[in-house]
Length: 282
Image (tube, rainbow, N blue to C red; front, side):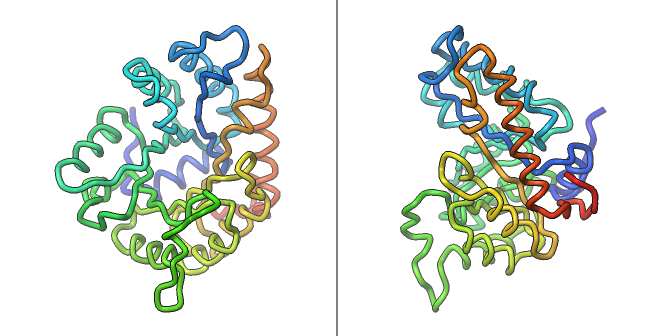
C-alpha cells in the first residue's frame, strides 16, 4: 500500500528516518560519457541509470532527475525519463529537476505531467511568475516545489541585485517560503554565504543544495551552512562525481563507492544532527 502524507515535510521526515541519508543523487546522463559497452542513445541511458540507481540506493535519500539531459534525446529521451522514474525504489524521494514556471493553464499542465503522470514527489520551479503562476504546484499538499533562489552558476546576475540593502535572492526566499508550507528553496553549494543567510532566516524550510563536486562547491561547508542552524532540512545533491566515477564496466560499483563516501562526509559534517533531529549518524 502506498503511504499517504499530510505534507512534504512529513514525507521528508519519514523517508529520512528510513534512509538515514541526506544525499540526493543527481541523474544528469550524457550519452557521450556512457561507459564502454553501453549504446550511446536513450536505451543506453536507461540501462546506465537503472544500474546507477540500484547501486546507489543504499546510500541515498533519493534521486534528482534533470529533465534537460533527457529532453535533448527527443521522444526516446522522454521514454527513458519515464523508465528512470519507475526505477527509483519505493521509499526514496524522486525529484524532478525540471525548472518549470509559467502562468495559468500551462503551469497546471506541467504540474499534472510531473506529479500525476510521472509521480515525482518534488519539482524545481522558477519564481518569476509569482505565487499565481506556481499555484498549480503549490496546492499539492504532499509534494514540494523547490523554488530557484540562489542557483549554483558562477554568474547569478539578477539573484544578487541589491534591493533595500538586501540581495534579491534573500527576498525571493522569504517571499516564496510564505506562499506555502510545501515550498522548498534551491540554494547552491557554490555560495556558502547565501546558504547561511537563507538558513538563518528560514530555519525550517527544506533546501535543495546542488553544486558540490564538479561545480566546485565545498561539501563540508555547504552541509554545515544548510543543516546546522535551527535543525533545518536539506538535501545535498551530487551528480557527475557519482555518475562518472568510472567509465569502465565497473561504473555501478564505482558510483556506489563514491555515493557511500559522500554520504559519510555529509553525515560527519552535519555533526550527526540530521533532518529528523536524531542524534544517530545519518
